[in-house]
Image (cartoon, rainbow, N blue to C red; front, side):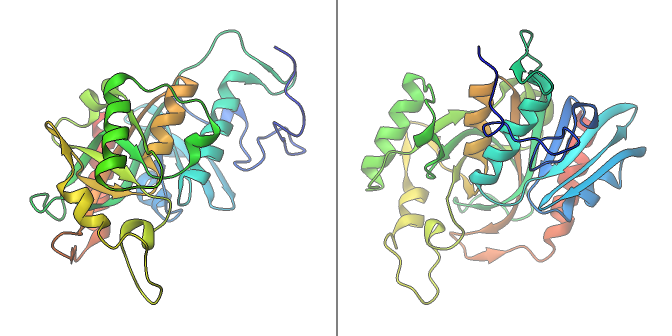
Length: 285
């Protein structure tokens, strides 16, 4: 494979990857990700020590150890566009020789756990609960620009959901890491997460501007194919799961349920729910 060009893989003057400002030595093989940069500190406060810190845009990195295991926590900001930047650059750190600009012959597999917040789509999912995503359903267009292989089950859900929810496009469906789900999601609700390309109209919220799909919440709430139901939605998981499949990493998304969209209820202390989820993930590593 030819060398990767300077415009395809942009490096900073110190040799670090462009947006994350990280070198290969700065990250661990196990990475916890959060959307909100402020939540990096919510994770690293439990570390035994922090050996490295980097602040660059919305991407904040702390690397240290927890119970003797080296762990990194990185914030990504919101949306699958940021997840595309994060996963491509984090993969470049371990699977591309940044000096020669050539992919390494031996690929390194990372374990990445997204700890996020989410709204429930089913009435029986309680506020304050923790949910692990089995399948992600992408309503964003990120995979329009990649060739994502889907199996027959995933493709069947994608076509069926497009028809039943009357969407003008076909979503994509992809499963997360079964290995990490068995390790980390044991005591969590197992669900299927819808990833939206926005917070307001794409999630059925209307303020001053009329929205095109006012029935979206109802359609997603009632949608099922056999025993496959949609449980919650947010703005990143589909990007994680799809790029993990393409790049060969183990990735899992776990969610603090801070809202129930069917009941129109919001949890009183979201930080408490998130912090308990962080502790649960760290203890399972």
